[in-house]
Length: 369
Image (tube, rainbow, N blue to C red; front, side):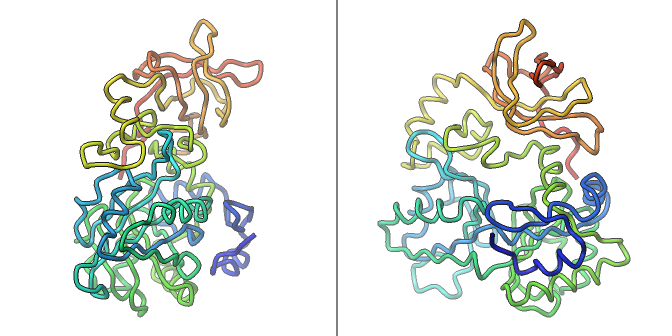
């Protein structure tokens, strides 16, 4: 297993550690429920340095990104980020990712620069996939091992971080970013993207400055009772928003159209992997759809549980499930046959010999902050 640059901090805090995507990661420090509520109501800090970062730079950088991603990267201005996915050639998803359009200060004339942020479990897979398609005048640089990433999330995140920078964080709109000084550290990329639905920022920093930044953020947040947050709460937070997790809700076998990600699948932009498949799926419809559901029982739905209609016929499968700390009821995501995808449809989740009554609900399950 690999360790993040902040591993010693997690051990000193008594974190419960476990393997995730090849990294030794903190799952929780106190308990998942308390950490979840901390982010929803206050401010918490995640170490997500296991994520991968690639720089794409060159005169044809945009051409490469347009070919391998589903969204229309030509619409991104410098200082903006975009959610997208990497389609394979069979209509599935290699990975989902963020595309950042960087400033061109260090570019030669006519060049553009982007940063791609990919899931930790897919770093090598994504690198090989993108490299395979790079027949363009463009360079790929893998900076994953040189980059640490802190996610400072929650409604008080801006007040905490504003103490550490002269940048006016209130001017950073959702899915925009800037580079500047944070806690006396130069060249920190400050991004207003998030995976919790509670607001906040992501801080990309050179690994040599990771511990200094971590300590500064916690010192600035003392008055707000800032807390470290593990991956357990990260999962419950994202699930309350209905955000997809790669490997569960989206995979190489799931189409973005099936997964409700048609909004990041821009078939009119020109050629890209699986474009013709997605056009056909839009025209003819898909047989199954990813839906959210709320369980009318105390038992939590788990990945892989079957989903049936009220007559007991198999209609799908659970991809993610948890006990919602905010609602105090079990919630989940899963694929069902399209005729059962409408909100309000009654379904049953098969948990061993027990059938749990559930109702399809359009995410988010709780209001976004």
